[in-house]
Image 1 (spheres, rainbow, N blue to C red):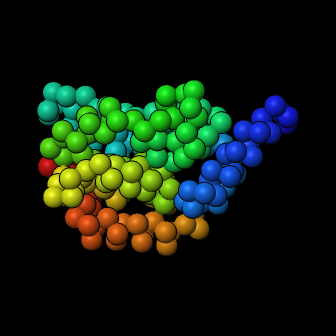
Image 2: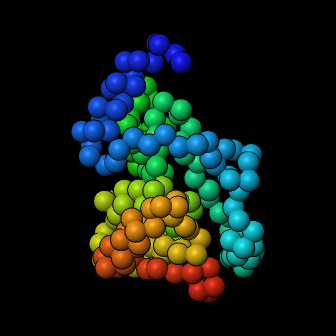
Length: 173
């Protein structure tokens, strides 16, 4: 335990409470860079490679959560901004980049948390007339066990707003 972090922890938990997003959860270590939990599953990786070869383009993978002093469910911004770390601020460059896509495919783990927060943040800056250009890859995401109802409600919410719900067998056609 590092007593020098006491003020940060108190500020952090207070900010989470004010945001009313969720109650602080202490997760086991997961998705660590270099681990199997960080890798793209083979089925999806193969489909991505087929797409790359067919279109002569590359995939742009987004890294997030690089600051251990804040949670970053969303790939757009941290849950509590660290003023001195730009990587925790709203990533407007990423938003502008993906808004120019004809088709944006979103997938990852976990559907109930990181995928949901990323897509929700992205929809704030996306023209609602173009929500159908966003494809939530339903078989490329799954919820944290015990949070299935939250994930299902999220999928229905974005589907009702016009986001395309796709699978690995249909999205790349």
